[in-house]
Image (cartoon, rainbow, N blue to C red; front, side, top):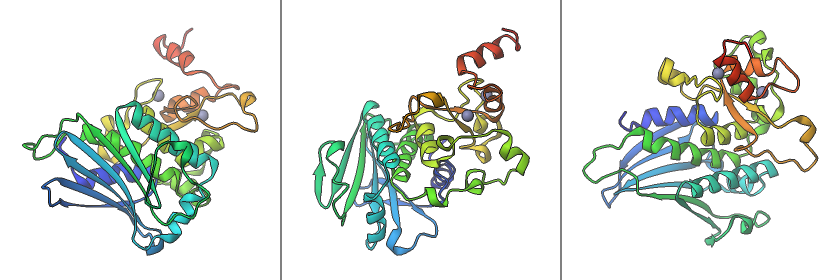
Length: 284
Ligand SMILES: [Zn+2]
Ligand SMILES: [Zn+2]
């Protein structure tokens, strides 16, 4: 599938729960760019996520709006969950071979621990730079599969720092408006409900059910892109006061069927057990 800015905007909207609008063009160096801006954000809170397709190189950049003082204040005041998730996404990008540059108030921040959260942010930028990607000068458009996972990781890192949880409700988590019964069928805990956790976990693990391999987009097409549930696997007994959810080890994607089945027992059935059940027609 060739790169299409509208499709990409649809995907990151589904993945983050924030509606994005795309625009695209060519910069003075003749590089193609695609930019995404959240819909309905006031001037003081707006930002853009911009992909630039260079020769064999992909740049993704977060740029706050020119007057987005409120946004910068909110981001520097991100809660511990948000800071941790942002760090997870920067680390994940590094693990997969991309470098990150983080700038606060004009200074480059060399390591994550040095991010001055307590300072008053007047400027902030995050740029992910991935080389050795198959984007050539000759290609009119690279394959969507190359670009999309990077955009997912990046947008998960961005939403981690946005003040979203207060507005997150069932409707946003289930935008198609599931009937009440369906909503309560799987009793999700707060780690599974937090859409920042969700975006980070899915950017790491992908959108296929870890138990049965179901991928809604592959089965139903673009309309189902980004549709999957997130299951929190860490036993409640292991959750102490200082517990910080790790989207890589604590959260996994499960389809609604498998998710409902793992919660048929307390503590939940493990994914390995569920896979074994699936492989043997329910007989252990
Ligand atoms: Zn499944
Ligand atoms: Zn669950």
